[in-house]
Image (cartoon, rainbow, N blue to C red; front, side):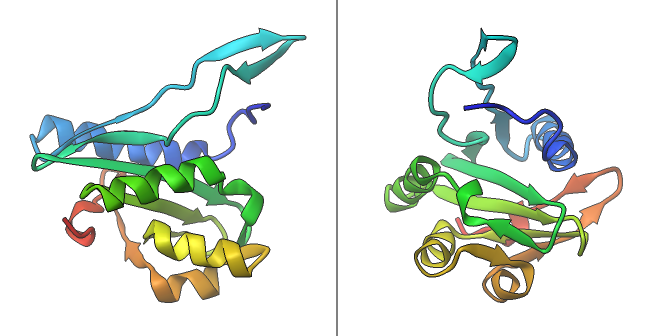
Length: 156
């Protein structure tokens, strides 16, 4: 798998700032999971499948989420990896907190989406449009200084 440098860096930067804010203020412990890389013919490749981008603990509960962003108004179905979706569904079934954070650049909107909703879209659609997914999502406002305070919007 080839990693596309800088794809989704805005969302990742915002989420890293948010996680650091949560840790600093003893709200939650959430960290970015680093993907182990190997060099192959002048390309950086992932050593294996990763679970999800972020995981940690919120009020004694395991929390995990995956971040996806698009410069358009649709996110292609191929951007949602089956093993990541299955991981998030297992976390929810085990009593943990699991969701996706989606960022649509054109609309400048951040959404929290349950994995079950993504699963339903993946069965039915080729891509997920902002107009369709927003009906089943919770919008998160970006606040100063670059914090995406999603904890009040998630169920736990």
